Length: 506
Ligand code: GLU
Image 1: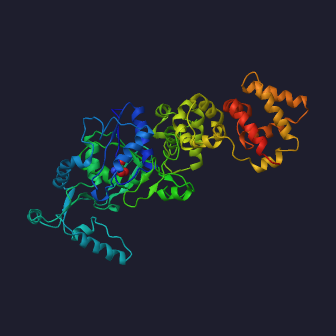
Image 2 (image 1 turned 30 degrees about the horizontal axis):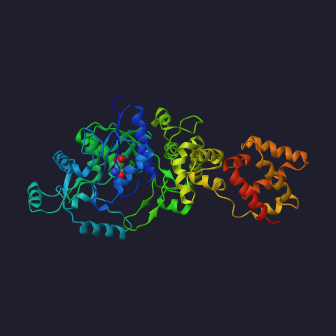
């Protein structure tokens, strides 16, 4: 394979949906696998749809995901500029080349006129299309003489440049995922290539840029498949080498049918954006994976498997493993159903793999927020290690461990009712005394002391342990009780014994 050069080419028209992140990811994996180049190109030719902050959002999100670029708007590269609005001068020339080779023409129809035609067609339950049939009777350079056309341009009449779709011609090309794609050109319309505002449309700019940036593979979402025949024809009209096309399957709603939309996330309580996004116009805020506590590597792992399968049972992949295993051959054609529970499962798996030291950075702010003074990282690390198996998110660590940091201020009444019997206070007071005299404040040692006491007094192990847990934790849950007692320290443990004995009422 000659050098692989792929691009991710978002339009800054809003936040990046997870489908877009997956497109970027597959491009990235493919580039890295083949020691190729990954390029970030910003396609901002549609000024009407420009959204403030979207470009920054896209870049930050991809950075959070660990998707890096070799060339692009903020990187060096010999094929720049990488933002289409900075390449404006380039496109008109190629639009005119197409006019000369008769692949395109000037069209002077006003938008009022076209709207009227659309409305009339609609009344007859039809759709108006600018195509081989209708172009014959419209206001364009195909119907005017060269002089008339020239005169109009010189007079400053507004025009667009349209692609002249061939009549009754099969457009055939190979898609790396879908195989042979065949479309009859007469089903396609004469798309605008160059707009009256002096900007190219996506179609023209995309092809010119892919050509001059020497893109070898165009890997993008299925929503672009209907545009692909036009793109293929444009390459052929310019006599340029076509890249390999690969159209990725759409991401479906968790219920199956239909494309996953931002509204699904709201409705079903999961994010559809990598980072949270505040709409600059409506001020509406959409949740993001980052802010919802997902690890970027877990998120990426989940996305990688949404449309691609490794052909083995393996589910957990680091980025390097993904690069090694990824190939377009194993990307499916049919839509991939998004599964929010599976996404959580991935996060939980990654949580188990993470070192407690590394979770500390995210957990310490949660402690501070809950009014806990940070004093001993080593203890916090041990606490995290004890509870993380029960956690999906770092925020769950607090839920599972707050009693290490806070003296109970209440006692679960259900547990009290079940575990706090007539003689319990006496046993607890005995245990308090024994532990106070323990030669070492260590879980194993204290475990044996309490075990011996239970045996000598012929008590039930479960009953005593549960009552003891109630005193220390305030509830019937938590990890190994002696480990809790060890980690909260002697002074705090004694305090909890006294408080429990005083406060727990049968
Ligand atoms: N600018 C297009 C988008 O936002 C790029 C499509 C393509 O990759 O060709 O999706």
